Length: 159
Image (cartoon, rainbow, N blue to C red; front, side, top):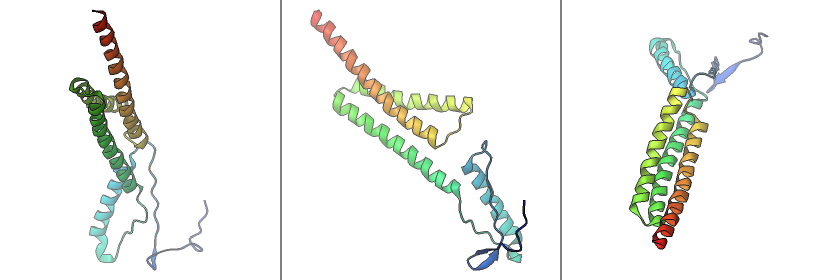
C-alpha cells in the first residue's frame, strides 16, 4: 500500500474534500446497507454540522436497486393481471380462469416462503425468475386445461 496523499487530492463542488468509498460484503443487502449509511451520515451532519462537516453522496447504488426491484414487482403484478384477462378472453370459461388466478398468488407466496426458509435473498435475479415462473405457470395451465377439455370431449362423444 502506497501513501499518495501528497500528490492526490479531491474536490467536490470546487471545495477540498475527503472521498470515502464504502463497499458491502456479499452477505449483506445493498439497499439495507445504503439506508444505514444514509442514517449515519444524517446523524454525523446533525452532530458536527456546526463545524462545517458536510457530506455529498456521489453515487448510491442502493437507490438504483430499489428502483429496479420496484419496477420488477410492478411488472410482475401487471403481467399477472394481463394474463388472467387474456385467459378469460381465450378460454371463455370462468372456472379454469379462477383456478389459474388463484394458483398464481398461492405459488408466489409458497416460493417466497421457500426462499425465506432456505436463505435465498430477494434480488434482481430471483425476482426475474419469479416473473418468468408466472409465465410458465400460465402456459402449463393452458396446456392442462386444453388437454382436460379434449379428454372430456372424447368421453362425452363416446357416451
